[in-house]
Image (cartoon, rainbow, N blue to C red; front, side, top):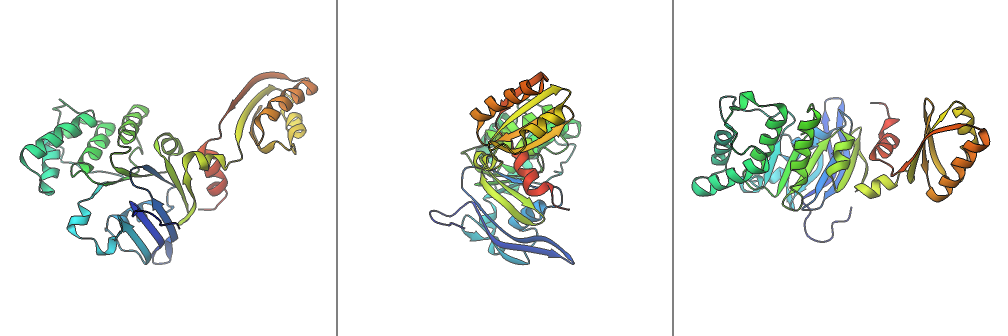
Length: 313
């Protein structure tokens, strides 16, 4: 792992964690640059929450090291922990409090008070879209609670914000609200965003690591990782005869992968211009009715399925 330059926000080397016979983490390596939104992607049970618990000091590793801004988390002091903000996967609140009450409570735990705390609360309420909301937290939607949880995790102006599944179980509106909030933090703080929802990671993250069975299967900038899937994508739908069309296309030099869903073919291609010429020719030669022909970029899903999908849990 390249550690040249200033200390990374997070640097993990050979990290392992064993629970009895279960090896939750099996020697993972990570390096997270400061100031980015970093996606930590993996299926449930891959070891994401275990990693976060080690980074926050809630549990100790069985082996390896984890450093935050150059300091070993095993030797963390109160001062170094004050640089962290953390939102667990199921945040807990006092339902009788308002958002302002709760942020005041959280701020005082960090020794904040007076005008500094009040100004920070107003800024965070605005960031979370909760300015002027006087409803008690017990009456909040799940999305409002998640946004308040992120605001609480930012009350100490952390250099590093750790988020564990912040969009899990949210409806589409709540998910958009939380993702917009996360995206707005880019460049202001480093965000480590753990999730199993590929579209969320793809939407807001600058760089991604894919965790599979306690190991890092890949880490790269999001666009670079998507490019590893083999290139661009063409989606073709025809009326009947799709099996023959598939047979005609398989083995083409420009084709990386072909998938079929009913009468629809999804083609991952290495040479998009050549594919745009060859596919219509094959459809015409087969005398098929073309219903759909779309081109676009490969998605993170292709990479994820390739790296993780074929593995047993």
